[in-house]
Structures are given as C-alpha cells and as structure tokens.
Length: 143
Image: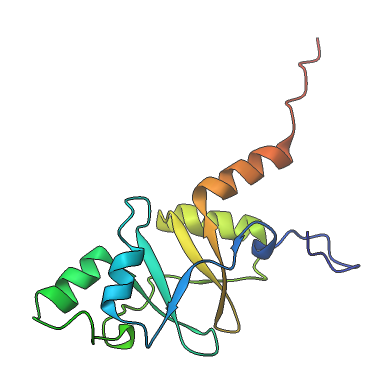
C-alpha cells in the first residue's frame, strides 16, 4: 500500500492492475489485431512515446475504422484509429471514490492515469475482491 505518514486513505493506485499492456501510437492496426485476438482481451490502450494515454482500440474500432474504410492494417497506425477513452481515473483518487465511479458508470475497467500517463487499470472484479478482503468476517450477532 502507498500511504503517506499523515494519510491513511487507500488510493486507486493501491488496488489497480499496474503496468497494463499498451501499444504506441506508431504501432499498426495489424499489431493491435494480434493483441486483440484472444477472446479475453477486449481492448488495448494506446500511449504516446512518453506514456501519455492517447486512446483505446477494440475489435469494433478495427472493423469500423480500418476494415470498413478499406485501409491497410499493415500501414495504418493507431494514432489515426484509436478512440478516446470513455473515462479515466487519477491514481491518487481515494479507493472508495474509485469504486463509486465504476458503479455509477457501470464500467468493467477504467484506465488509471497519473498526470495523463497510463499507470494502471482499475478493474471492477479486482476491486470487488479487494473490498471484500478489507471487510473481514462479519461480527457475530450479540444476544
């Protein structure tokens, strides 16, 4: 856990999946297609050469912006097809706010940024497990 001496607040950075797989803006649509081939991979993040989050590519993105447009996936770079992320969340956001954010937006995963740089992913499933671990066992009823 990352806690300052005077701050006991658990932050998003404490529960995120660190260093998510990302491609760069100069990678091609073909590379994104290869990354997106396994069924469990739903999206890939796109960053610039400094790690700043530039967008997201999904299978749907590739079909709509590359295949349907008749573009060559071997030469089409991700900076020209990546969609802006719907949401991002700052790494220093208190974890309870991060949980509320995910619930309010019905999001499965949200990219975590620190001054615009992609540093992780906040996953609903991981967050729910983390919160369940932090709760501990229920207190026995007192008679």
